[in-house]
Length: 575
Image (cartoon, rainbow, N blue to C red; front, top):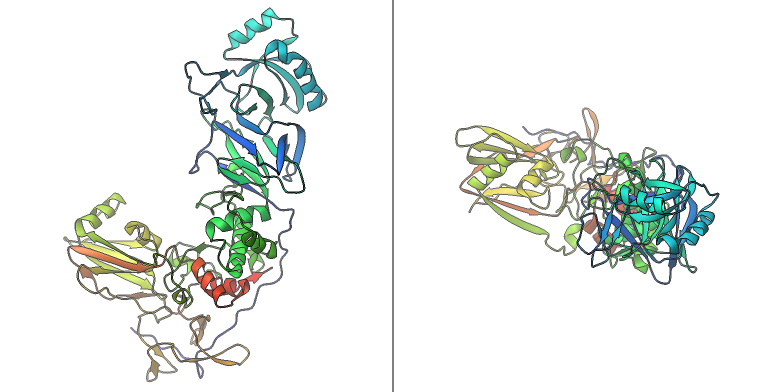
């Protein structure tokens, strides 16, 4: 059934008001980034080695981060390559890495030591005492345990060996091995222990590079360079001697390490600025990893972060030009989702996931079409048997697929797909599960039986049934929005160009045209059936929030980062 929408004189464009001011982030903000951790895509590590980036740092300070994320220094080393691991028996492989697996002929770092019955007032005092014993016992080092400094001597693979060494000597000491919280620092590729730390789970070892000049120091870790310091979370829940590695970094330095992995540094400055604000806001908003002792992870589960290795003067300039700016809606930080491209229209958050967020409203996107986007279109073919297998593997109770019926949102993106088998039994896949089922790049695709034309959804912003727009009465209608003029909130009149947010006056009040509030979903009205099914689509991503290629296109047309962000995020303030 077609709905009649009453309008006054013409379609009305209502300009949304920005939200009230809210405090922006400051340069003092830090971000805790989970680089390697239990349960993450990279997993926790047996050992984690650091190396100073030449010309910016030389040596490291040891300490911990307090409750305000401030580094508390305890001591340090002039060594430029160090490794952190749990206090376990570790074997040094031929490549200099450490493993808990015994290796014949390999040098071993034992986890049993002789701890002197004396406490010291500082790291330096403990280090001085350790230095006096090193030649005699081969290994001697300072340790920070239970809030105080001690000295540990020797490196033995068993308690019996350590006790035998104690019995042979004259030290006032006892045999000790680190707890499940202990982290050992060694000179990389050697058995030389430099320091041990045990904060009993209240704090964890932190390591910060020492600066050698005016440049902010950088550190190599796993092939990437990072600003900031590193924390080694030795939770007892970690098994097998693993440690979590967390980068504790200034917010702006973090953003510099995100945007070049989410957007090319060669793109226009205004697009990079928009991406920087999204990345910064996302980091400040995110809380899902709080139980793991960090704010965000470094993978696509949050947003890709690999330090400063790929940063350029252009990408850094975009971050610096927007420093501290965040996205707000109603005085609260938003969750600024973004993706590569939407194929022609973004989508309401609730039509892809669950929550209806007022700043994540779908709208027709006229900008992507103005540029060439790599791999913008795609096509994929499935047989009926393959579809049946896909559904059954996902847990759906269905026989051999006989027909497929898609429905679309008012923006023309996929909403549901009903599959019916040869016995007449049907199951329905909804929202983003449709994209994931077919393993296709975007939410914007059609389905057709092999050899037939696809059933097209309504154009973005079309009415609920995909039909024409009715003006004032059912006797007056237009087939599309093209050529219509809009009246803005201040009374100015302009021709619709496809970019504005449109609102209509209905009998129930004001509603956003094409947002789902005024139209719900558009259905194809017919099933397709056959032995093969062809999926054809455009775009790449979940279609919620900012299109990165759309931002590129807008910047190419002279739009500012504020234009970009207020187009893709409805009613936001940038402060």
